[in-house]
Amino acid sequence: MFASERKSEPLTASAGPIGTGSVRAGLRLDEPVIVLTCGRSGSTLLRFILDAHPALACPPETGVVDLCTRMGVLSMLLDGPPVGVRPGLTDLATVSIRSWVATTFGSYLVRMGKARWCEKSLGSAESASRFLDLFPKARFICLYRHCMDVIDSALEACPFGLRGYGAGLKQAIPLMAECCSSSRRENHVLREVSTSSLDRLP
Image 1 (cartoon, rainbow, N blue to C red):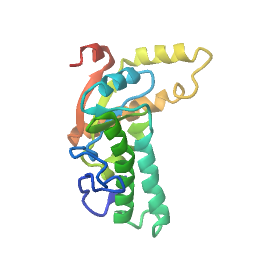
Image 2: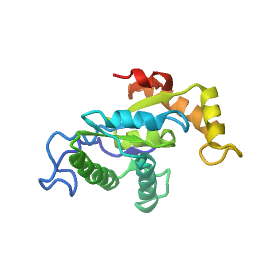
Image 3: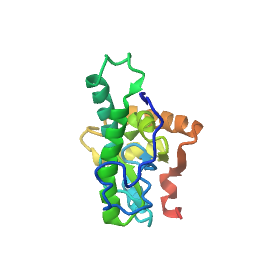
Image 4: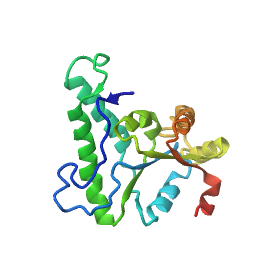
């Protein structure tokens, strides 16, 4: 986990290149909703449900949570002393990453007519804690599915052997559960959802 050297400021229309009057007021760029889950859990269906909400824009998997983390690590490697010496990201790194997100997702939100962006990518759980250092107002939706149903679905998708995401389920499931547990303690969990209850979401 890395921590920024200053408290994060709200991302508004003036944060970054996007803030030239082309962005409507009211965008909640610093309050993303992140889905934490593993493969074969019904996350694609949940993405469509979330994207149908009038205030949420949930594009196909972008990998932005992991990307922001990688950008932070790169900055720590290139921006000063070796990793471990610096207490966290510099102001420049924090502002740069958040500004890039504001530019990219701000434009998307305006185009979609939504106020808040949502991300559903497999593997987000691994980088979730570091992402919170950049976006402390982020909230998580933890999506669970019965482990036997996940395995059955993975075997159906990979009849000739578990490969790709199927092979990573053994590591992904406990990691996702641990991340959700930690986020729950820090009050970052917006909602916990079971795949079997998706058809009953309001």
